Image (cartoon, rainbow, N blue to C red; front, side, top):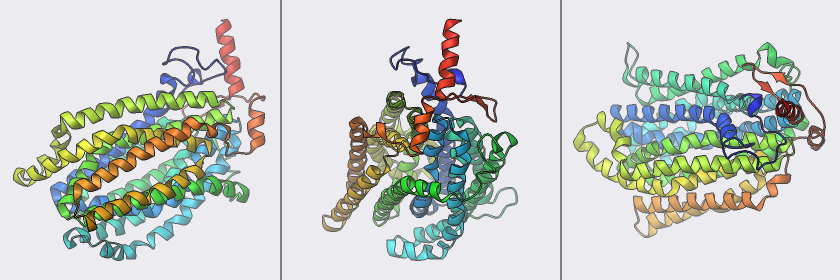
Length: 506
C-alpha cells in the first residue's frame, strides 16, 4: 500500500464508493494480501484433511476435534499476543512508530513463555480424549495428532505477535508472502510424511502434525529475520524496545487479556460442541469435519478481512478519524457479505464441486452416504455464512478500538447456551446430528447480530488503547515519512494531508 492510497482529511463523502477515503480500493489494498494469506492456510488445511481422508478416514475424523482442542489450549496467549496488532496500528496512526517495537516485543515475550507450557500439556492428550468418549479407532489418532501439535503451538503465538509488526502498519504483502510460503511448505511435507513418499517414513496423521510444527517454526524464523533488518531497528525501536516494559505489558494484558479470554470461552464452547458430535459416532464426526473443511473456503479468508478492519480502525482512531474507521468497516462488510453470499449460493447449487477432491481418493460406495450427509450440512453453512462474516467484521472493528470487555462479556453470556441446548437435545430428547447443526447455526447468527448492534451503538468511537496524550499530539504534529522494507512510505495524517493538498493545486 502506497501513500497515495492513504485516507486524508478529505470529507468522508468525497469521491466514489471505490475511490473515497477508506473506500473499496483502500480497504482491498490492505485486505487482499491478508485474504490471500489466510486463503493459503485454507488450501493447506483443505489438502491436509483430504490427504488424511485418502490415507485413513478415521484420521480425518480425528483432525478436527484434536485441532480444535489444541486451539482452545492456546487461545489465551494467542489472543493476547495477536492483540498487539491494535497497539501497532494506533501507534502508527498517532505518528509514534518508535513505540511499535516495544509493543511487539511484549507480545513476543508472551509467546516465548507459552512454548514450554504448551509442550507440557502433551502427556494430557490421552486424558482429554478418554473423557470425550470418542470411538477408540478415532481417539488413538486424536491423541497422536494433539501430542505432536503441542510442539508447534508456541510458535503459533510467537508468529502471531511478529506478524502484527507488519499488519498493524498496513504492510500486509509481507505477511502474505511469509504465510503462503509456509503453507506451501506444509503441503509438501504433508505429501511426504503422511504417505511416506520420496523415501520418507509413512507417519499418517502424525506426519500431518509434524508438517504443521515445522511450518510454524519456519514462519517464526522468517519473521524474526525481517523484523531485525537494519531499516527497522531505529525507525521502529526494534533494538531499544527489546526488553520487558511492565507498564506497556500491563496495558497489553488489560486489553488483550479480555480478547484472549473471549477466545478461550468461545473456542472451548465450540470444542465441547464438537466433542458432543464425536459422541454421535465416527460417521457424524467425519461428515462434520468435511463440511467444516468445505466451509473454510468461505470462512477463513474472512479472518484476513477482519485483521484488515482491526488495523484500519486502529490507525484511524489513532489519527482521531472515527468517521473513516466506520467507513472502512462498512466497506469491508459489503465486500465480505458479497463474497460469502456467493459462496452460500454455490454450496446449495453445486456442492459436489467442493467435494470432488475428497471423493477422488476414496471408494465411491463408501463416499456416497458421506456425500449425502455433507450436502445437507452445507445448507446450514449457506444459511449462516453471511452472519459469520458479519460477526468477524464487526467484532474486528470494535477490537480495533479496544472494546474487548464487551466482547468478553458477550462470550461469557452466549457461549454456554449452545453447548447446554445441544447436550440436552442429544441426551434427553434423542436428537442427532441435524439438531447439533440447528443449534450451531442459531449460535452464529446470534453473534453476528449482537456485534452488529454493538458497532451501531458507537461507543467504540471514543476508545483508545495507547497513551491518550499520543492521540492528542497526532492531530497537530507533522511526522516525516518513514521508509519500510519494501520502500513504501508510511505517512501520518498531517504529512499525507499536505501532500494531497499540494497535488490538488498542481
